[in-house]
Image (cartoon, rainbow, N blue to C red; front, side, top):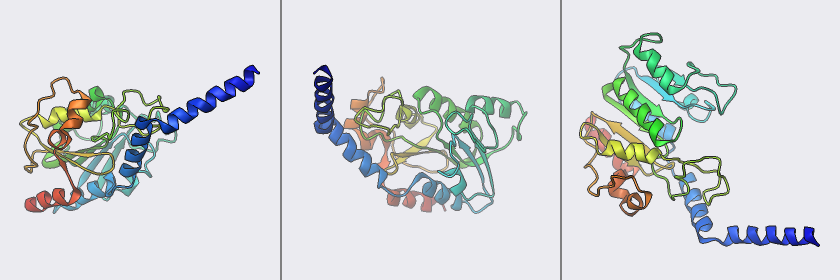
Length: 252
């Protein structure tokens, strides 16, 4: 009897999840993002192709290189990942991004004077770590280069949860983390121009070379998701890929 009661409880809870408005909304928005185009590697290749020179590319946070790195077309490219999520880890530098940039600054790897045309940041999706990665990347980017970030436009607060492990949230296994906070911090940096392409859960672009748009009009000093959500287009400078290409074509 107790076993039947427990089965009934599980069944009822399952029904509550399936019919919960937050779960329904998150499921619809997840599917919408998954079906958007272009993907991040399409945007990165577009940017690399915009340069009239042989390019130099760096990827921070690779996991399985077939997902992105192997799809990138660049004369020279380097990959960095400690291998916590993909044990094969066939990357150039099997290091954390902090260690990689430290050794690069010290001249222990590559050349401390090296500059990259595009640096793609897709490592640990916490605001603190992404902020570190951006600050380090700025030191090694060309004056007309681009820093690209994934997961800058979480469709719900559940996608923007701090812990990846909580997979029964309305966002399920989809996780953008708090990357958006580090991106928003740079949106307020007067020395950096920025926008977010409305595709693939938000492809953030940081550059010094092109005017991408205005800084956010609405202040969000504590990086509250609800404030960002209410002012999403302003906060992230959210653009379609078509709108973004117009800005790049002006540079060319």
